[in-house]
Amino acid sequence: MARKRSGASTGFTAFQYVVCIFIAIICLFPFVIMLVNCTRSSNSIMGNAISLIPGTDLFKNYKVFEGKTFNPWTGFVNSIIISVGATACTIYFSTLTAYSIVAYDWKAKKAFFVLIMCVLMIPGQVTSIGFYQFMYKIKLVNSYIPLIVPAIAAPATVFYMRQYMIPSLPMEIVQSARIDGAGEFRTFNQIVLPLMKPAMATQAIFAFVASWNALFIPSILLTDKDKWTMPIMVSQLAGDSYKVEFGAVYLGLVMTVLPLFVVYFLLSKYIIAGVALGGVKE
Amino acid sequence: MTTRSQKYLRGLSYARYGYRYAAPFMIIFLIFNFYPTLYTMFIGFTDMRGVGNETHLLEEPFANFIDMFHNQTFIDSLKNTVLIWIMNFIPQMSLALLLTAWFTSRTSKLKCQGFFKVVFYMPNIITAATIAILFNTLFGYPRGPVNELFTALGLQTSSFDFFSSKGASQTIVAFIQFWTWFGNTMIMMISGVLGISPDIFEAADIDGANSVQTFFRITLPNLKTILLYTLITSMIGGLNMFDIPLLFNNGGPDNATTTASVFIYQLAFKGRQFFSKAAAASMMLFVIIGILSAVLFWTMRDKDAIAAEKLKKEMRKKWKQESRGV
Image 1 (cartoon, rainbow over the protein chains, first blue to last red):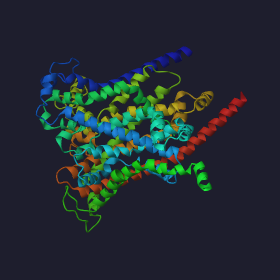
Image 2: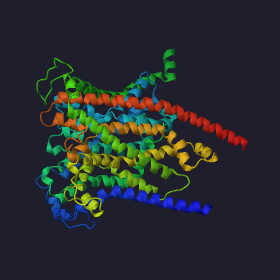
Image 3: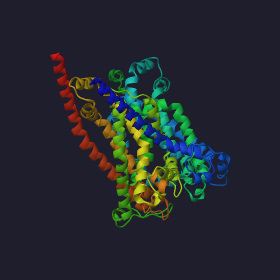
Image 4: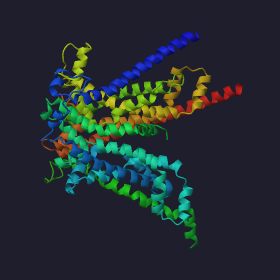
């Protein structure tokens, strides 16, 4: 009886592994094809789209981009500027906002927290019409300000920071800093911020990725080709001028994904832990 | 003087710092979020077209809204959005739950869980625009990797044009959405399960519940908060789906993958730039999302919180009785 059962469970475990490996292949297959095909000539891809043997046409494929609107280097630099700026704003001000809720008692505090929870539910895109017209009126089209400064108000990050701060910031520390004569702002910058480092690091990754991947708002605001971000550059690859240049399209995609791959494989442990924290109740 | 020092002692004098540190968030929110929302609403009542043109309030204030209500493309785009979201959400939840049950099972420990988690989550971090174009290339017609694979596997006899088939395009967009999000949902659920008190599972073990019973009677009811959270965030994200349908097949064929966001984008920023109508459509979408979120929240939350609480109590009672008996 016992033997029978263990035999069945071994079979079931094998089945579980087969399913997991199958799903893993589905997750990786598109990226593998992309990485291999970016080194192959468009003709050889036309003849045989699936291959695991890299070709030798990497530079030929790259030459296709010359004189066209897809410029990954410009896109890379622009995206870095915007994403770093937006991430810094989100992290610093979200921690400050969370601190104002956790450390101080003020009348409108509860209402303010409810407001943050409500804003969490409002998706940005449905208000984009008014946002665009407003930015046009104050002449901020083709500027990075509307892509960086609004990151100061990031309700999801504030919520996360509050959850993290409540158990990990003993008020005694703040009190003793006060007794030692430190100003409130200095206490925040020199005592609270260092204590919040782990939470800030996790949230920085997510804020950076979200800003890096954004397409809708940047694509309506930035009409100047020199200011385009990476996702806007990528969207150019869907155009007609690349209809037969398969190798070049794959290469373009690889160039936009490579920085994310590097970040992900260096920090995957923290990223997975960060996502998991979102699933912890209350 | 005394009142002042008393106040100081009670910490009330620090209240102004609370307001001060919450101010940047509040100011930026009012300027870049709240005002644009009101402005979008206002534009819905005007005849605004393009940028920098003279704009007037309409004589019939709700003309744009009525117009959108009768606009077949807008209605279809709403239907497409919901259809594609459901086609992605049901398999996404099912697979995430199945994998969660396997990964948190206490009888059989799967190895390489860390590797699987990293691989399953990976699509979520890659730019949606890149993924859309990658899939567009993969499903290429007449020759592309997927066509080649399906023909080699004998699933089809000749190349299939996925881009001119409505059903195929919708399915692929839903699949991409599913593919990018199931890992995220799975990881959230796993951590939710790990957060459930082990006492409850022990009680179930003592009662002789098998793993299937434990999953449906204990794990699921205790995951309700996270399920609700996933449902609401996924719904808001799903109703705003933009990058993937726009770049995979440009909303086609025959508007089959035109989602509400793609419709609004094309109305305002392409062709004749009907900002006023797009604003009206935005506000209608906004209201729909608000109502759906509220309905989900109230119907799911109360009942289940109460039910879960009841179950917990019962379990605890049983456990206590059992332990007393022993």
